[in-house]
Amino acid sequence: MLLSQTAATHAHSMMMASRTSGSFRAAAIWLLATVANAGPAVKVLNGSYEGIHLPQLGQDIFLEIPYAQDTGGENRFRVPQAFNEAWNGTRFAQAYSNACHDFQPDADAAYGMGEDCLSISIVRPIGIPENKTLPVAVWIHGDSYQVGTSGRPNYNLTWLVQRPVAIGKHIVATIDGDIIPNYTTELLHSGRFAHIPHMYGSNSDEGTDNAPTKIFSTDENIYDYLLGSAGYDFPSNVVRKIMALYPDDPAQGIPLNTGDERFAAQSHQYKRPAAIIGDVLYRATRLDDARHYAKHSPTYIYRFNTRPFVNGTNATFTNHVG
Image (cartoon, rainbow, N blue to C red; front, side, top):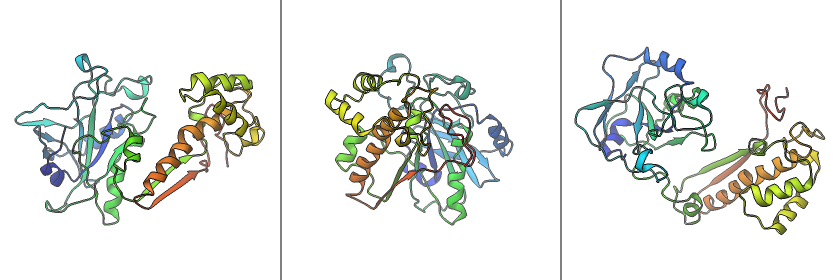
């Protein structure tokens, strides 16, 4: 779905790429309790939508506006097809709907789960003059493109619109065509991205989220995984070089700063592939991206090494107090 220029000037919106979830249910009940009888309206190329006014936050929200067709049926396994439906009158954009299929239905399916799930939610501050142009922000929720939904409480981005208002600024979002029209590496290497300052970072312990457990007892286990199971397409001599650069020394492994602790319940050499995989998936890609960003605009990178004072219990015991 393409938002019209009218939508850009009237929506004054912050957009969240959305796959819905039910864990936001309690917050949604509170939000809906604040709704006035007549909701805010916005016109897009396809038709008009009515959203929800949140007077306590000074915001209007529009939930689950489709940006592509249902991905089921003849559209299954195809790239998303343009949402080319048009209508007269007004459709409601006041409730969360389907999350895309994933393996965590208990977390993501309280509002339904299905293939008709490609939608956006919009948050806009109120009281912006119609002729005022504002910066654009587009937010895509995390969870590795595997699980998650913008309906989760930690992905409720009313705060991201509220904070700029508090400091006398405002943001607006719109889509004109595809957000990501090609492979990101192709876009970066050809300079086809916004030439604005970038801040880009990752967590030191990121590899613990991707390293399999209970399969890395020996050097050969790690070699076999990196050569044939990880999908990296490394030749054998590269795998051997990587293993030489990442020796079986738990003090150098990930989780960071955990000394000689091996977390043997995960496997004897677990910290070694956790370090390798974290660097391959996060640090190396961050460095490559930043080099291309820096050709066009100021670029800042960071590595987040600090744990919260108390973390939740997890498989690698990084829930130490400190």
